[in-house]
Length: 242
Image 1 (tube, rainbow, N blue to C red):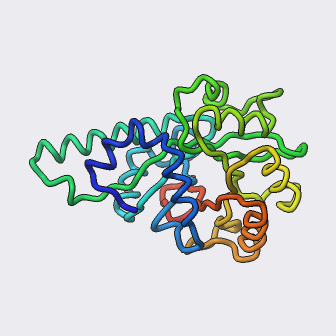
Image 2 (cartoon, one colour):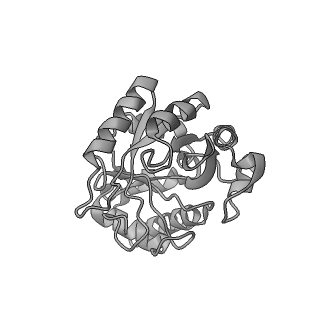
């Protein structure tokens, strides 16, 4: 699903919030999708990662990713910088009279990771394809987790939906409560998907953990949820978590 440079960057102002197109991509995700085709869970220096957003985008292009989202904790700063970098890259190539249509770029969607409470357990909700300027998300974009009613998973999911986006339960098999409890509870609150393909023990090379993947995938299928994938990169290599 690689798009041309012109299509990819010109679409950023509107396409980055295009939840319908991202939903279509999520419907195609398999265990082979990440980390070399799609990656929807990565962090930059705008939260607790080590990569500058511009460095992350350089790696994404070098890897040949078709689509991605930067999901910094409680911040869209990395996404904004990455979007700006892509626009500058397009301008530079056009100024050099190169043919941008022959140069594929990955599709970049808005992203953010929000800490929430679900069944009295602390969980993380990945937010995608939303309007970063929407007022309902302002409370979650302050660089730190929130308390009170705003921390409840249902409130987070509703805010993402009001901002036009999709909500996904991150790494469902990594919490105190089991995915058999958390995933149905999240589904009852209207969550759109689950991070099915995730490497729980940071293997090298990166690959989804087989047992957890199958468990989570079956639960998601039964509940009609979308499946996503991501490396949860915090280090300097998009092909690894750390």
